[in-house]
Length: 123
Image 1 (spheres, rainbow, N blue to C red):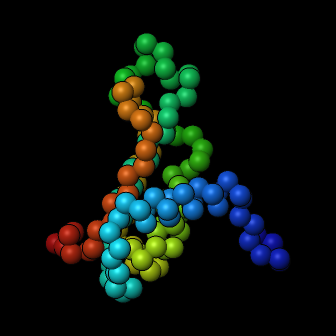
Image 2: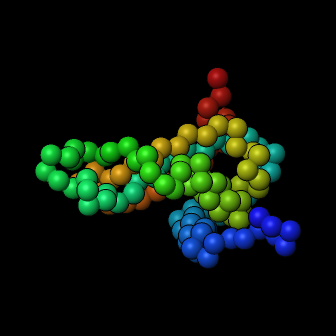
């Protein structure tokens, strides 16, 4: 951030646009009430680094504690969702659950995004 505005890294802009495109092509076009509380569940599964591909390493998912931080990943997804009809503003999100993993041996890297109306989680 500077007095001239906010600098957006071109890689981040491209990733955000890719998320927007994937959301728009995989979700039905639904207009959400801009005042409706929403719950967001995100699961990030990254490819394994070479150092975790030895035989003695677990074949299951491994928690990822390296950069990029999970809060930055979540922010990118929430910004992308705001560019779609699914989320008017990130202040609508009243519940957030996110996890960050390296994929299992028989799994491909992916990100799952689930957006629910607050009614689903009503107590």
